[in-house]
Length: 435
View (cartoon, one colour):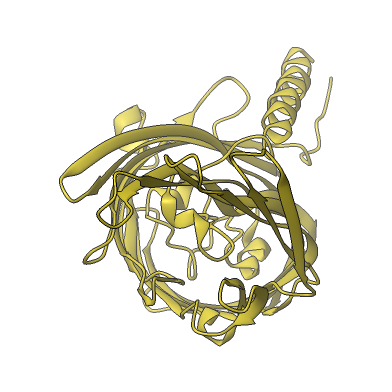
């Protein structure tokens, strides 16, 4: 009976902790990058704590004690006796460099809250909150006007982003084949502004503010096929498809032209109806699992942003119009793995899950007509078992990631990120017997 009371206290504390994190989900920006001014913002990493250590590897991963929201077919592998809750946060330091000038910035962010349990035989259910994009930047540029002593300063700032709340199902159709789907509500706002001011008191100050309020849906489908190569070796092939569509959101541009001598302002507004979209997304990967010892895998994903138009201000025509060629297809290749020395050992170091991963990705936007920066990243992490008198399956996931985004003639970003997540894996559905 004492253990039962301890379990209930743990559940209560876990719920409070999860609720506190969830309340911060829309209150923080997960980036300081100037590149978040393009498109819908910087695309967020949607992996959980365990596969963040593998740099987001996901397509072929199937674990009964972890939630892999990036391929919903994996939900069918969830243990039938437990309820899994996984929460995570991150902190990062980014160094920006351009033409010999360097600057550091840091921020912290709520990353995800996900859960999963077995709904019925061969059918798993998952739910959660994930970030989709982040917008957050503030910088300025100053230059001389011709040969005069007048200078012009352009100040850029932005904030916001999109969030995703999902409900997913994974069904084991037969022993070696599973399918799944995530049904998501996608919402959020963003605001981006450009202010042009002059040191000459006779010049006007021009302010442009771009914004949108988004509330729509997102659909993602997945499949996984397993093949036992040897009694201890299992090959899993995974695939996902995300449905692209219009978000039904209007893009708005407000322009304020202020006469610095008279302080008189003139305002104009432009609206482009149903302007924003998300792309078709495809993923394919495989994972090789050797007993309870190690797992390695490789993923490839493609997002078809290049076929989408995006709103842009036309200063010549004094309009806000849809244009093609502002976005481009994004591809990403990831390799990673996990190694456990001895899962049955009494030595904690032998039961830790050691993880690694590396990725190469292209950007989904163009900067001044040229391709945006390419990203190279590597990660390493640990899954540390949390053991007590009544629970030996919960895990503390810690990982570090270094990412470099760079392109010729553009700002170079070097980011070091720490991810911390806790997977609560408790026997909620186990029958307890009291004597």
